[in-house]
Amino acid sequence: MFWLIRLKKYLADKIKKGVAVNQHNEKTMVIRKMLFVTKFEELGFGALQSLLPLRKSALEHVIFMNVIERDRVAMQRGVGYKKSEERKLREQANIRFIDWAENLFEQGMEVGVYIVVGNLVPQVIDAAEKENADLVVIGRRSRKMMEVFYSGADITELLSRIERPVLVYKNRVDSGSVSEKPFDKPLLAVDWSPASMRAVEYLKNFKDVIRKINVVHVASRKELKGTSNLDIQQLRKEKREKLDKICEVFAANGIEARSHVYVGDTIEEIERAAGERKSTLIVMGSSGKSVWAERWIGSTPRYIAEKSPFPALIIPHGGEN
Amino acid sequence: MGKRVLVVDDDPDVRLFSQTVLEENGYLPVLATNGEEGEEAVKKEKPDLIILDVLMPRESGIRLYRRLKTNKKFKDIPIIMLSGIAEKSFLRSQKVLTEFGGDPVPEPEAYLEKPVDGDVLADTIKKVLG
Image 1 (tube, rainbow over the protein chains, first blue to last red):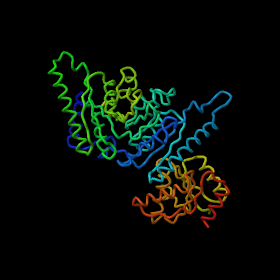
Image 2: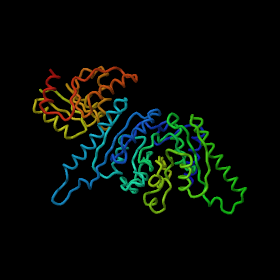
Image 3: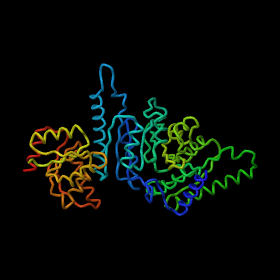
Image 4: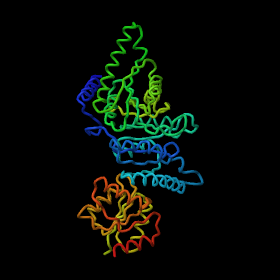
């Protein structure tokens, strides 16, 4: 607990000073390298193109990744290991990646590719580490579609194990199409945890990509229990003032930001806020709970990443847990 | 002693194919699986020819090509590009990188689009190495 308080103070001081910290000991947290994990059906070229405005920030290198699940090629009685199936799947992925890569190469970008057989989460973590990726993009189809390509368990496991920002990309529920500019109008949900503060550090470098950011805190009903109207107003004022300080950080970095305080169930209110503000993306710090704890206790970032119709950018906890 | 040819490709099938073609034609193959390894091998092995893929993990052949062709020590090593990426995309990317402020680079000695016949590869190597 002592160290948690110290860490919170340390990160808050860093924000005040306008100095960014990240796990790679760089001066600023920027997206230079993006690992784009796809099974094609849920994340296509449209999704990739919608992320290319990140080039205005720092993006210069995209790594495509396709993980062929083991059970598609695994040993079967009488058949053995399906080597020809693996070849076919690899070649299909390769053909698509070549087409995408030509497009990016022609724009002067650097492109890499991984087509591997194995379990999704360890393979993604391994590639992200090898490549030192600044952002991992993974797809999830909208809830209205029957097929779910990455199960909730995969997303939970990935978010719990990876120490890098993860963008869970979603096609729009209404049309199945992609958001044209996911970073255009994000909603940042904060609870002043170290992970939230890291999200602030991360986003403040995106002035060329973000048009406006809404910074939201959801006060729980517990906090209001047994208090008078005056107390409630005081609580709102205090939270608002704290949010305004975060908005000042964004403003100092050339990003228009507005603060909002909501009261009620955290998940419901974050989604409500995102809808009301016509947000293109929900950004949150991840709790850093273990997979076991996430399954039993639940977590807001996990829910938003898995179930919310909004794309979700989850910033890792940075080891405070 | 045969000439040393460095093959930089992440696909093990292509490495094996190229290795076989090279050995059958009396060359000494040296193999690397990505751009970073490839650069190390260029420094260490000083090859007479490089067969270079474009789309690879860690570093693409486009960046490695640029670095080699703008390096006094290595710019004269002939390079055969062997890739699924179309030649026009490769040339366009080099042009764009030059426009972004990079040094101009010459076109590769040969460009072969995958898949390629063993005979075509062998003939191209022979032609490039004179």
